[in-house]
View 1: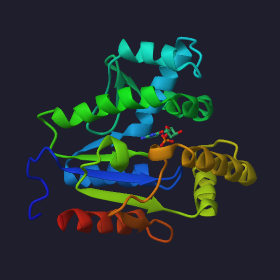
View 2: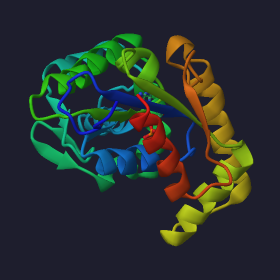
View 3: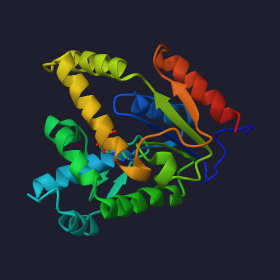
View 4: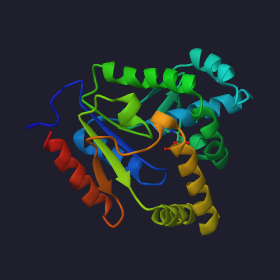
Length: 228
Ligand code: DC
């Protein structure tokens, strides 16, 4: 591909990886560099969870969540910010309560299907040059036609150390063993999610995001996009 900013609606880069692998940072930065839209699919699941909690729904009841979703418009801006019925949701999606609750919502297959359809509609927007999507099933289910699929790989211990440093920077209390345990639990839960489990897809490029800087990782991703 000679010119990465050509309007071409089927241009999708899908970035998958485990929790804490840095995939969101890379996807957001890559989208900015390309002038494309960023789809933070995890934020959509978080937004749905936030709404369900606001409405006092039982997160384990798939029908209740589906019913709410059918009456709600979730979309996102090109910087990845999620809007629910036109209202922007940001910090409220990153609380510990949402962290521990979101898997209950993301476990429901019919909810996943309905939300995935709404995410796919982003590609139909005339203003979008291309999309960088991140999330557990960005390249397997949401955008299987993605021109480039990337799996970001980082050892569990490194992810835990990074999360601990992030928490400390944010002034949050932070215990390495707890973080390690919770990331490992999330890995196991995600791994059990069949076709939506995080994995390097056939043909995907694997980005070892372990001992490289963000700039180096972005440079690598840009080279892969330019080579399309
Ligand atoms: O990436 P994150 O931590 O913001 O994701 C929040 C939750 O949503 C996490 O439990 C994984 C889930 N998720 C998912 O099941 N499928 C996606 N495409 C994105 C996130």
